[in-house]
Image (cartoon, rainbow over all chains, first blue to last red; front, side, top):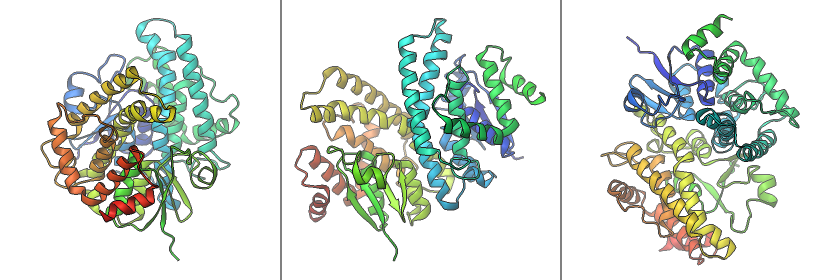
Length: 237
Length: 237
């Protein structure tokens, strides 16, 4: 009678993608429940009242226990489920390093990628207008500064951020960078180290990542035919 | 030959106060190294080059290992040192709940209290001007909204945020609220539940909290005569 974890998500959101990929790659059984942010489904009704009082995505319920916030859900999974060690390694204080990155991401990378995405895609989409040049330029500058800091602070000569093995820091970061990249931002100009790291992470994540990114990009093109169906199609390809 | 943890802090910063109190209350041996943010000591020299590449406070070095970010340092202490269980309880998924609050705090409470503090105190102090009314009003509105959300989302009929025992969520939150409160903001108007919770947490934290808050308020009045000396005085009172 074990109830599977319920995962509420929207692939338009970078943290939803990162956690979805982690769940799949870790082979944690879960029920995938797509929620449309564009339709405001996370703000009203069943979701607000019974799933997530924060009205935010991603969210989980685990045995009736509701939880919000990317980093809190990630740590909950690491504690309560069988998540392979390399995603959040204890060795060499790896967990402290990953915690440090995730905190930095929340107030730096996450703000910059979200702001660019909103100005360039979300606001024009919702208001049926062209992007406002000034706002996009400002967001571009902030994003460029953040990508440079990311490269300097977190990338080095090793394969992944924490060394030879991929961790949740890499997975979370690549999903952040896809947010502007998938709507045309050239994230790699003047960032060779970033480009090499991105390619290595993409290769390592393999089909789980490809499938979710494909679904995200289909949604951007307006050709997504509902997330669950879309994912099912992507899996078959 | 065990080297004590080095803790770099400025009591003007809310996370510095929270971690300092946690270290003291947990009786973790540490070397307290005050860094003056007003003098820009965190941006240059020894600190930037050898202590903290993020140029941020608070920071630690533990056996030569540098770490930044309030939430990352907190979890590092919980893993590597003897922090009493009630600060980060495993029972009833308490850690997941605390993680959720700390993530919310980082993008909500922390932004609102810092913004108010900057507009009302820091910018006028550095520029030797009066606070800009418009900016302060805007920051007040944001803060008021955030305090209301905090009350609704995280406070309930129990003594502390996680139940009968104080946790790092309470400690971190009270230090956030002191940021505007100590420069004259009435945080309790229309917030009876918040006022009751604040009083309970203050009482529970006892002298460690009182000493650090006293030092913070002395710095605000410009009467702080160096942090270490000031703390020593506060301890004697």
